[in-house]
Length: 180
Image (cartoon, helix red, strand yellow):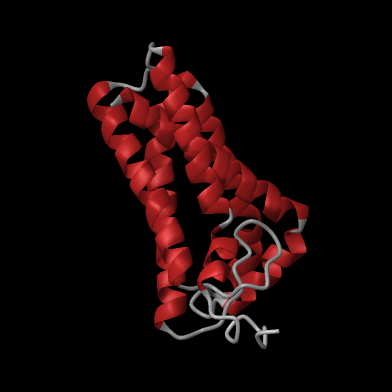
């Protein structure tokens, strides 16, 4: 189970870092995207534009430091609960809000974003469970570590590029192509 925990740790640290960097590269874009969330009070949107990437970087840091891995998983679980709730609310209300999760994007939130965030929530929950029950150490067998690293890389790539993957499944007419 420590190998699974290591893979979860790597995925969460990488995704949180990439998401924070994307938001910090275009802070105005992320702040502007928050205007589409009518369930977030207007006075809270500007602080959230700063707090969300700060929380993502904090989670990545907590997961990177051996002494704070369990805390990192627990904080990530709470954070991912919020991350999963946001697209659920957007989709349930039928809103077309652009996802600026990894920086500027023209893709509105959809079920794909709910699924992506649910995967992150599952990884953080599983990591929390393993860390609190078995400890937060690093496994010792090199083949298992290699498999955890490769698995984390593949999952991170799928998570970060969910918009592109979703586009592969849209019909050409829905994607704006007239079939030429």
